[in-house]
Length: 556
Image (tube, rainbow, N blue to C red; front, top):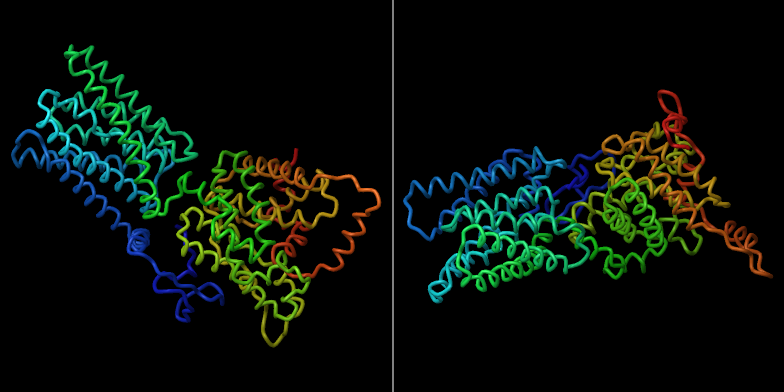
């Protein structure tokens, strides 16, 4: 989780005058659980993940070596532990350094190791039960009981929590570890590996909890096919076939049962944002969203429109549209604390900033980021969503109050510093955060268009994208100029559809109503006020000017 520097982690929330911070903003403290403290310490001290990774691999090895159907000595046990450590270490190394999208967060590496350890423990526990059952039913071959061990459990969980490539590595690791605990190692390794790989690749998009039962079904089918192949190769008697097939079906059922049970626990402990978790958070009946709707209805509607823009842009460039949609819903939840200080919620047309100094108004506006992080952490939103709250503003300037401060500058108070009127950051670190930043500015600015024709919407979106790019706000994420062009096109399509034209009804003059409403509307900055200025300006580039991006592909 990219927690800004001005967030102090420790006791409960409160002001801390001794903490260093980039501006005069009040710092916030958050009560962290022991697990969260471990994640935070691991980000600051690289030695901790290495040590814990070794201990985790050693634990997995001890679990594997602690049970074998056949007697073996201490040398064999030590060899099994060493082999298990090598297997788990190789998987962690692959995920960290060799994977196409490396797992760089210690938190996610711990999650990967926890899934391997948990799956190994479950397999060992079930193995003890199954071997005991085999003694009660001597007419059933021992290998038939082995077929019920859910090796694919870990790969299915890894496919949901990470991706199919990491899950494939986990499938191989778990197949090796499980094979070390049985007598027929080679055959069981092949059986476990095939089922686990099928389970890993059977999950594409997790739309609901039934995904696990579909995965369990395909695992069972793969198991049945593997067992029939073994019978053909080894020429085993068909007497045990019904028991083998029953064990294969039980295997798939256990995979579905354990996966659907364990996933919510892992999501909660590690704060990971799976598709299932994001779908739950996208429910507009969530308490946090209902509070936003009742307390800050203007912000709530802005968030809904922002979600449409961000989702379309994410789909256009291959980013995660679900993260963008959910992030848009929760990006401004901090405005619940002081809703009346944001223009979209000023229903009485009275602007509370008129009686405040520009510096104080800027502090109030910027503080909604801190309030949002606090509320998100209290409700244990996934780290991927919490990160979007500060990153979608980056280090942008609160332009309106900065200009007001310069206009009303008192010579006795010294020069107005630009950094005092900037959001504290960090800049967007992911494509989803960058999309949210662009969409936030575009949605707010689009409300200022009196005649939102397609041409005007296109020009507005291009100017905003150019401004954000030239300001350097996108320098820490991996968006390309081609991505920016596709983002702009997607947002233009959505905005054009939203601001569609309607014919005037007989006897009703819409233009006069709009004019009267515009005269009654108060001025106050937050998004809309800055949007009016931003929509009509172009930030000069040090190397040429605002036309640079246009020449590089921002227009057709």
